Image (cartoon, rainbow, N blue to C red; front, side, top):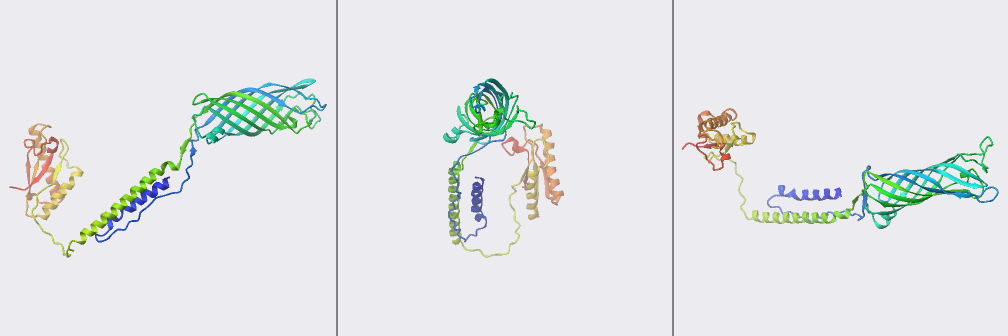
Length: 400
């Protein structure tokens, strides 16, 4: 988009250049200009790296699904508690990443009751299904979030009553490391801008040695259902951008560019036609003509000041140039003060100082002879202007 606006500004600048350099007899030909750029009308979303982080805390229940024992009989499975802590970030309205940890015990028995502890750390990729299908909505109350992940699982304190996996010393193993693959779905309910309630079902698929018994199918599973709260950090916002939102502005800018080009062409043609009807003057050598002219310059001062301001110095310069061009003239430098400030006696002295400041500049800076200058201090007894503030002034006149 910045590229489009830059092109438009450049076109407008190029349009104005000919007005300063076109000769009177030239006719400027102007072609219609259209500033265009092919864009895809597609929403894109972005956010600060500080936004869309969250922490989740949850608890629920889990059930291990393991193979039959070596005797061929099924294990009896028991429901146990599990606890969850997660930390994640949504990189877009559609995809997020999460580190999630789970801890609990799993129970099963065949003839004997067996209990072991389990910890699982997973890295999940999350997909906001409703944002993808129904459109992005940061304020949506209900969301469906499938996810898929990989991680590591560790089990320990397994009594190993029927374990057939042995360590290097021939003992039955009571600890196992595994690399689970997990999949699940989370239902999220928005409670406020910073808090959500979530419920998720999850299955972690592991190798056959989950309970230190390797028999039957090579894959075992741990299935859990968890609920809890998710706390959003830094807000939950994505900024939407769509290039097509600016197309009307670009079209309007194109129209203005072409309107101005049309006006330029019309003005150039009219100027060429008008000057073509005028006689072409002969070029003559310029000569300096000294003539009398009315004195228009004045020097204005601020309240209670006799110092010539920088913006007033040009007026002193102008009167000096006029006097140099008219060497036989004398100028009366008349000083004034406003009547609403100070006493009459004080204002008389102030107007005198203002006259003196101007005379000193003319003589000292511009070389005007003092004999050609006459000072006349009027104080506040005479007010040349009806506006009080305007009377803080020095006026140049010629002797009567």
